[in-house]
Length: 281
Ligand code: AMP
Image 1 (spheres, rainbow, N blue to C red):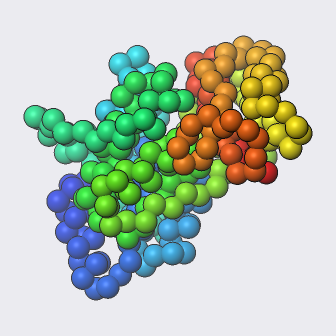
Image 2: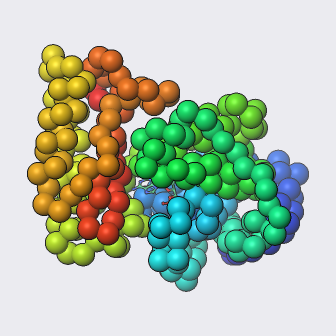
């Protein structure tokens, strides 16, 4: 079956309206492109649970800060098209920034509280941009289900809360993080890592996995986080933005260790800012 490449939001809405009229269930996988096996796993999950799968590829300007990598973000569109075809997507939605944000666009979605902690504290406005573009994509495509990776855990929590608070008729599904064989979470930004930093990067997941195992000991969250921070700081060239242990729904700091908490970190390694998280068991 041929995959359609759609650039115009109106045409995308029309196509999914026709699918819905035929009684078909639609899954949406929002991405910024530079697709890798992590994205492919979301596409596969959507295909398994829906009749039609739409992958959006849009590098969203409103979620980048003025000093961030919007212009430098990789845009290998031919490879992304091949990946979507190979994974059996029905449509690739690839709008231009002008089509998504026509002149005079003035409306934004803010998920307060959840957006200001962790990555939001270091990237003001980031989650406002994410929530806004995801709501727009959901409105354009009108999927029954939408798929997000746990790799961006705070993003997943923000989107779930937005869907609940604004009564969106969509089910938000979180999918497990795909990793390289050495443990590094797959990410489009890993391409920024020069060989020396790439060699160090798996130590981030190793520190979190070690911390999750340590969380079964009778420690306070403060002591546990101190030990993990020490390990992260020992990675040559690394600077730790944050390491936190939080409730998986409120993102509030945990006051005692228990299974099911999220242990998250953001670490700068050279030019790249890498995030990762694990669950405590
Ligand atoms: P991005 O293109 O980086 O905005 O990511 C698009 C979607 O793919 C988001 O929901 C991400 O959480 C998800 N994703 C990115 N990397 C991974 C990964 N390694 N494993 C699973 N999902 C991922």
